[in-house]
Length: 395
Image (cartoon, rainbow, N blue to C red; front, side, top):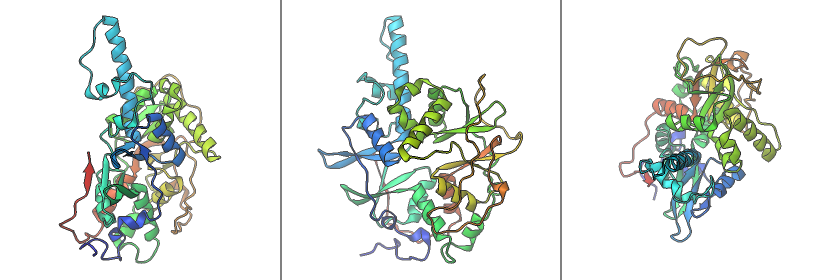
């Protein structure tokens, strides 16, 4: 029997059921007794950013491991070593370590050697959210709009039917919006609105310099609860992008932890190119005059989760940045235009050249999948509510 209010109206994209968007999906999972390095290998191999942890003894899922957890783990490991160095220098044991540090100090193993279940949800950023198959996209979007990046669609208590992500929902909306009745008039108007009119430009942007230590950059990512940080030169011009996607390679290439932001980015792009057999662009950007429709097409085509907003010359608004180092960054593939053609069914006309950012532009904003889903949630017609439905978070 179909649940009241869930999937009963197939007209609007928000009323589509979650199970329809994860149909025939192969679920990747990792044994909870695997090491952090083995879990990172799974992320790299399958090109994913998180993986559910399965306890084979209890035949149940015990949590989710994602890249924010890895960043928090690396920071805790570094703090652990610093604590031990200080303790040995004064000849005493430090009892003032943070709970985060104490959680990963016991083993004394190198980065990547600890059991992955030990650091599941270490960052408290993306816990294991589970939903029933009949959950609507509207209900999932409400969760995503608050910052969650994915939910597990459960077949039953012990079986995951599929993982529904922010990116999958955005792609589905984009495809549906191509048809005449796939999106409302207000949603089409939203798609044709510029980033400037949507007030996504005049925002503080967290930035790093090319020579900033990786550990410092990870600290910024975790402190600001963001998944990507702009790399700028001394004039705040965008020259690169460091994201959590790059962080997973630290479990394999441990020496990069002691390097700079740009060293990690270059190594990550090289390793991704080796894996995929093609070059990887370092950074994508758009101008404030770009429409949301153009940005969506670019995000889908590149597989990115956020895109920088840039403009020529100095920007008067304050930008959250860090002290600039002495070394400048050589041209680093910035401003490459991504093709707006994708595997989606929507056809986007040739966009004005003013839409695409260029190398040397100044960072003046950022738009993420969370921002887009929040806009869609705020502007969408309200679907009928199901008073009996609640999504659950596995702690």
